[in-house]
Image: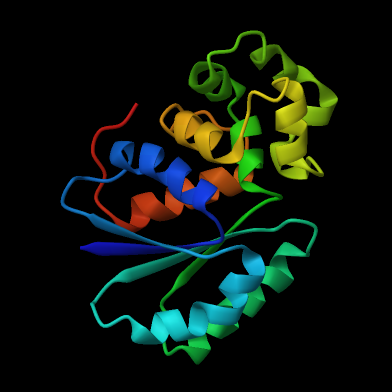
Length: 187
């Protein structure tokens, strides 16, 4: 089985490289197609999908940012349909990929070698990670600039809990992967 991810940016790839080995069996081949941001993705995804010859499962992952997630998802679904790939799965990280990290501040602590971040999960501002307005900026602030997009995503992806993440969009993404592919026993 080949699973192809169409990603908005490199930080998503780095996070997935740490996360997926704990979610998928080794029999699943993973390919990453990384764009240079959401505009590049939306401009070029139809052409890239049309070129893909192999029988694969496609997952498009994009940040919501400040857009309406339903509009973003609908626009990406239409692009997949236009490419002749109506079977593509579109998932939106609400608001940003870093919302998923706020859903598991223990993973952020472990990945970045920090302490005392988990206590922030109880603060009203962080209770619902998908509602944080600018999670990347907020995570950088909360970690005294220790969080950097690529290196941070690489380190945190290996630590993200497969069971206890408070981000609904992360949980939906993970559930999708589990339905698509056989999974090993995970912790």
